Amino acid sequence: MYLKNEKKIFLFLLFTLILLLTACSSSNTSDVEISKDVNSDLKNEIIITGLTEDELILTVEEIRELETVSKEVTSVNSSGEEKTFEATGTLLQNILEQQGFSQRDLMGIRFVAGDGYSIEVPKDILDKRDIILVYEIDGAPLESKSLPLRVVIPDERAMYWVGNLKTIEVLEGVEKSEVSKILFLETLKETMNLEDYNYYNSVDKAIKTQDLLKNTEADNISETVYIKAADGLEKNETLSNFEVAYIKMTGSDIPTFLSPDMPKGMYVKDIFYFSYDTTAWISYEKAQEKLENLDVEKVKGIKVVDVLKEITFAEDQTYIFMATDGYVVEIDANDLSKGILYQDEKGRLNVFFEGLPKNTRVKDLLSIEVKK
Ligand SMILES: Nc1nc2c(c(=O)[nH]1)N[C@H]1C(S)=C(S)[C@@H](COP(=O)(O)O)O[C@H]1N2
Ligand SMILES: [Mo]
Image (cartoon, rainbow, N blue to C red; front, side, top):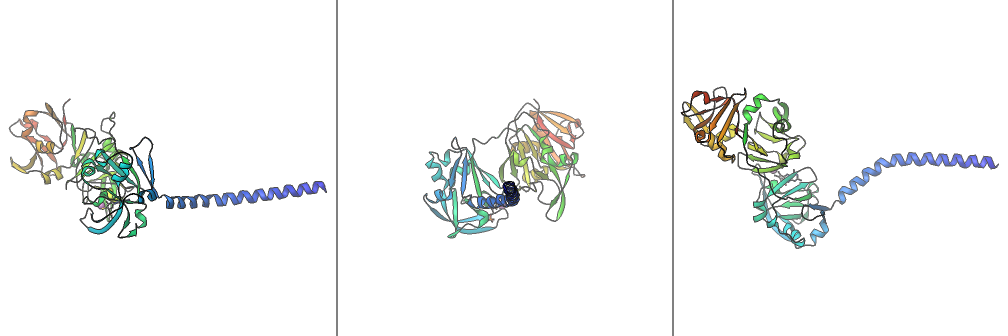
C-alpha cells in the first residue's frame, strides 16, 4: 500500500517534471521574442553619451515636459526633393542647458539611429542652427519608423534629420590630420582586386575599403574618415562604418561610398576625395571637373598644385611621384607648380613638368607624397 503510494507519487512527480520541462522549453523561445518586441516598443528613451561621466538616459515623457517649440520646416534630400511640415518638439539646447552645457561649446555630435543610420553634425552647424528633437509632425505622432524622436535642423539638408533616434554622442573634438600622401583612385582601380557590386539594375565593380586601409600607417589612432563629394558635401564617417564598406568604381555615380549593410542615405556619390589619417584617395576625373583645365604641350590637364591645394596637402621640400610600375621621380617644391596632370588617349593618368627633363614624366601615376 505504502509502496504503491510512493510509486504513484513518484510517477506523478516524474510526469509533472516532464510536463514542466516541455512547457518551459516551448514557451521559452516565444517568451524571449515577446519581451523583445515589447521592449523595442517601450524604448521611449534616448541616450546621450560623452557629455557627463555616466551616459544620460532621457525618456520621451521627460523631453515632452520641457519647453515646446513648433516650426514650419522644409526638408531637402539629396535629390533636391522638398517636403514642408510643422515640426513640434524640444530644443536640444534645453536639454544641454539642464546639464550645464551649451550647444555652442560642443565640438561635434553624432546622431545614431536604431536602423543603423548615423551622421556627424559638425561644429559650424552646432554654432549657428537650432536642433529640434521632434515628437510630433503636423500635429500627429511620428510615423513608426521615426519613433521615438526625429531630429530636425531647420535650414540644413535632410541627411541630418535623423529619425528613430537612439543615441546622441557628444564628440571630444573632430580630428583632421594634414594629408601627406595622395593616391589616385582611377590608377589604383587598375592595380587592385575589384568585387562585383549590385547597384540598382547593374553589376558594377567596387574596391573593398579594407584593401585601401591596409596600406596606411598601422600606428595611427584616427577614428574617422573624411569624405568630400564633388558637389561640396563633406562628411566624417566613423572608421567602423567605413572599414566595412566599398568604393564603387564603375557604373553610375562613381566613385561611390556604399555598403549593402548601410542605409542608402549614408552612401556618398560622386566622391571628390576621402582621407584617413595622413592619406587621401582622390578621383582625378572629379578633380578635373572641378579645377581649371589648361592646354599645355598638346594635352589638356590640371595643375598638380591646384589638386594639392584643394586637399590642403602638407608643405615640404621634396615631393615623390610614383607610378604603378614603381618608377619614382623626386620633385623639388620650387618645381611643383610646373607639374601638369593629364589623361592620355588610353585613359591613363600621367604627370609631366614643364621645362624639366623628360625623365621627370611619370606614366600611370599612382601617388604623390612628401619625402620624409
Ligand atoms: N533613422 C534614419 N534617419 C534618416 C535616414 C535613415 O535612413 N534612417 N535617412 C536620412 C536621409 S539621407 C534623408 S534625405 C531623410 C529622408 O527623410 P524622409 O524619409 O522623411 O524623406 O532622412 C534622414 N534621416
Ligand atoms: Mo538623403
